Amino acid sequence: MTTATFRTGDGLRLAYYVDDFTEPWRSAPTVLLLHAAMGSARRYYAWVPVLCRHYRVVRLDLRGHGRSEVPPPDHPLTLERLVADVAELLDHLGCGPTHIVGNSAGGYLAQQLAMNQPERVRSLALFGSTPGLKNSQAPSWIPQIEAKGLRGFLAETIRDRLPANADPGLVEWFLDEAGRNDPGYIARFVLLMASYDWGGEVERITCPTLVVMPGAETVGSIANYEPFRRLADVEMRTYDGLPHNICDAVPGRCAADVLEFLQRRFGRG
Image: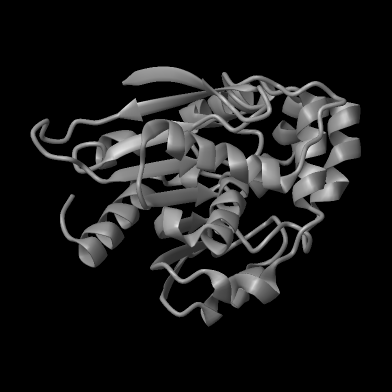
């Protein structure tokens, strides 16, 4: 794994990671993994071995998450700037059209990039990622986070995120990882995402798209995924019985579905 940083157009230092175990004499396609709010690139730990033999796998710590810098409280936080972070990373790496996987909020950024800069996105795979977070209970999280702390809030609501039979070690690791984030920044980030609903615009996504829905969705409703059915080239799958954090609960299944989708649609990496 290569660990590095780059500086964004507004001066923030963001961390990213590259895993590439493809044949060194070939130019492998790139798959970019974008994590959820309150997460980090580390949450894709189980995905990397499945994908990196076939693709150059790049993971970004979104601004304010993981090892990336946290913007100061007076620094403007906009959806456009978050999407620009992704585009600037692709430029920094010299990537052409890229396969992008987005989990929850990471998928919001991927969708926006596909709608507004379609030449950058070769395909999309969206996991637990609706067209914005407006039609959800997310704003109600903020006073709970303020009262109980980020880890405390997530511990109390863990069944909204992971199934009852989740490995206790995974639960503790998940809580510890999420708890590393700055609560003030997370509140700003969640409220920003919860102000958007672009369900009426999703037809602007024209690349091949895989949408994977948690059958027991607990952040909003599974009905919020319905606008994606209007896409010109979309495959939709449901993971029955699972709450929101499917990428953490069944990472091997998720990565295998991405690999199958990409190889079937674009040939073997």
